[in-house]
Length: 519
Image (tube, rainbow, N blue to C red; front, side, top):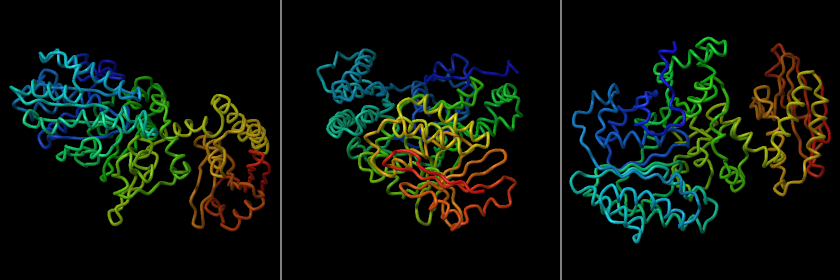
């Protein structure tokens, strides 16, 4: 089987390097052909680490007429001309200093290289927008030019919650892109990509012909990996993972799907795998959580706080109307579009009658990453200590000693220094949610029943605990609610021993103060 394995392009974002190095390339070229022959000015957003940069690089090679790089790919049966266009490729990924000066410097370095390439004098005395216009006109004199901008929103995401800096950078970006409309006679194709959707009026004010393909069914699989692509082009690696883990191929596929699949970028709900995580899992032979390790979601936490959003709702699904969903980032009245664009939530259903989307976690990896990211904010900065305590709690539960588990948790929570942001009942509810969620697959939060919603269920090999949490109210009220709403009824015919657990949390003492367990 070793001879069947093409090297996986983990960490490689250049199409030329992938093809010349003999790495595996998931063939998106038929979609690329369709895109460039149907559209001229294109905008697409996708979460980070979703293959946007490889797509930009592939477009660059295609428009440069690098036919040699596409041998054996689907586009070879479609393209007959292979016309060469000058390509101006910019990436704003490094422009994260948060100031206009940093933005001008980072963009200026790339413009200087392009000026050298196209025989222009140093344009450092001009604004970035003026320099880009000079380049387009110069490059497009003989054959119309192509402009590709990757990670256009990186400068603004750095200062998303600083209005003054955000406005300054928005003005700088608007100035950079304002030349595109006037340069239309010299342009063949424009492609702009990023994570979020800032207002077209504020950034691309002149581009009224910009085609937004972010949620178009035809291009929903342009980035990421589909189930069919996994089971055909990547099957040798799946088999290797199965062998290493002592699983069948079907079991390996199921595990990969549970961990890394579940993204949907259009109403047709075609499943998409996170390519970064999938490639790393197959390369390393481990089903770890990879995606959250590549970035700290500080903006996510600020969004939760700004909009008063409860992360517990994500398990059950959040509704989002079409108009809310399409709102620009800086004008959102709900954080849900941001969570979707960032990859923290994805479309799980769409109701055409009400024009509403249902957003949930895409998969296990994202949910685990979200919970882990919340530990420093809701519990303590020492995440290793928190995880060790959770391990102690888990060990006590496995030993059928829930009393010891809750006592361990009580002592631990009481020892955590007071946090300035711990000023609401919702904070403490989220704290308990995070702690119990760290127990993983043995815990389910916010479980819906016919008469209500159970705060939490915890299961072992022999027992199931139905738990109700009360803030500044006695544990007996929690038990009464379990009885009144028949929370045990859905589990009555199962094989597990059932237990009712009422837990009381005090916001004054900032810990669990009482619990009652009834069999």
